[in-house]
Length: 89
Image 1 (cartoon, rainbow, N blue to C red):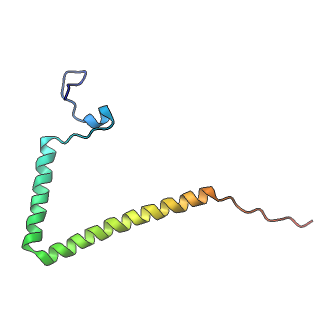
Image 2 (cartoon, rainbow, N blue to C red; image 1 turned 135 degrees about the vertical axis):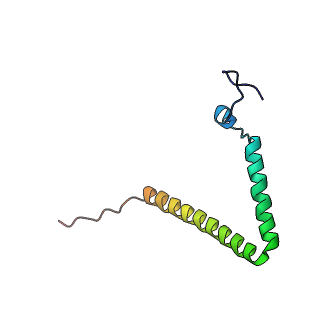
Image 3 (tube, rainbow, N blue to C red; image 1 turned 180 degrees about the vertical axis):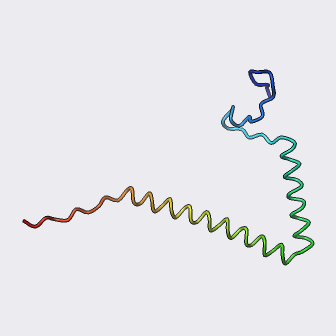
């Protein structure tokens, strides 16, 4: 990894290169502790863990479905033209 133009290590390499993502050590520690804590809670309290996981996954799925349906409705509304009624004279 190369240093930036100012001689310092880039904090957000993804913004500079456009296609790479870099995780610093603090992010890695936080992710490890969060995943380890979640795994411990699920192992210690299986019923509560299952209910929590099913709830979170269901909410994520419903949010994705809502966003997709909204996108499709807007796209369909843009592509359809209003039908002009024939004028009686």
